[in-house]
Image (cartoon, rainbow, N blue to C red):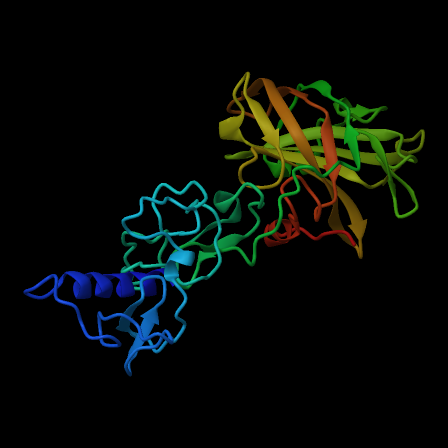
Length: 351
């Protein structure tokens, strides 16, 4: 309607101001002339009732209502928020997601491969949903809409920043005085007798499915707390066992594990614990299903590096402090549904 009105208004200016004699009046019912008493005009013309003038019916629209009922006159100085194309309109936030409505008065060509004046994006562009609005999480992408004037957020999901954890691990302060150099040394467990504990470092109980889920298993009486490092990552494990007096042990799930990039392990650094790439530490609680490890819960919180000593040779040490760590199902986390991200990384989700 805005574009139509501008055309009609321009024609009105031409008719009212054009010609050699600006005072000359057109015949009644003709282009530029006054309307007939019954508010009609000659064929091909319509009566603009508010001005009582005949103008061209440029698009066959016989609606004779005054366009100024919808948008202000170009010379009226009215800055009504009804016109989405007006500059300076605080309600016209181009950074937010908008619907695929036809842009008003935009001469740019959407889809030509170049983002032009008046276009927010170009066909084929996409951004993380969380960049469009904080109401969305970062698990999917918004795409440029069909008119290049906003983002299509059909695949975006609401952020679940307010979701509450099922349980939490209390804050801990711990020093591991022996780090294995590589996974092979870790699996050989040459230092195992120095890494066995009677009490678990991370423990919690959660009401789920009408029962109580314990971390670790309440039958476990021995916990192997150990870690290893390779060229890029430190991996930490709390594995729990049910052992007799002769140290004949049976594995008791679940296990707690986390990993951190070596580049982030600098003394004093506070690292975020979560699942997405934005977090520097990933914490998983793994159980057992169909003869395979599976992820039951994920942790969110912070880890502060006290000290880390990784040098050539087999041993290193790692001292850290964690905040209280909230535990969530993979499908309902502060980052939204992280199931796909975990599965794409090669993990199985417990059902």
